[in-house]
Amino acid sequence: MQYQYKKSLVDKEVTFMLENSILKVRSDEEELRIPLESIREIHLKFNRSRFKGREYRCIIKTDLNRKISFSNKFFSGIGNFYDQSDEYTDFLLILHQKMTEFNPDAVGRSGSKPGIYLLEILFSLFFLLVFGFLLIAALNLLGLLIIIFLSIPVIGYIIKNRPGKYKMSDIPYHLLPSRR
Image (cartoon, rainbow, N blue to C red):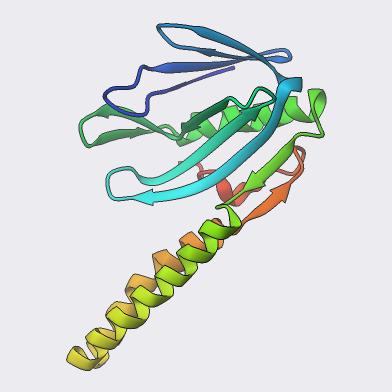
């Protein structure tokens, strides 16, 4: 099983390959061979951005404090990202299945870090309250409807990024993109 990823214009394309108990990470310049037993943590999170839209990210940390990151969005040009959610989901499901077999004690983390999560909630509430007060004062009912409309994605983001831990055999499906 393999998965290809390119983050941006300046980054090289990277290929991730799962072969038995080894995760190979290959770019033009180098090839890393990471035994699954040396993976200490897999962190899944959700990002929403203007250019990438709904981006799901995986960050792998090894025993040697190396971080490897990839997402379901493949850079294909300036301001243009290809959605490869199906391939990303398939790769993560197989990676977690192999981790259950070769390294079941690895830590699975989901969502934002607790401190960042608290700041995200406070900033969102502050923004919605201040902006909401101004809109409601200026536009009454229409302002209230605009605030409700704006709060829906914020609430979805906050729910998806709630900090947590999980077992390798119990992947949090809310942090995987839905199938097309």
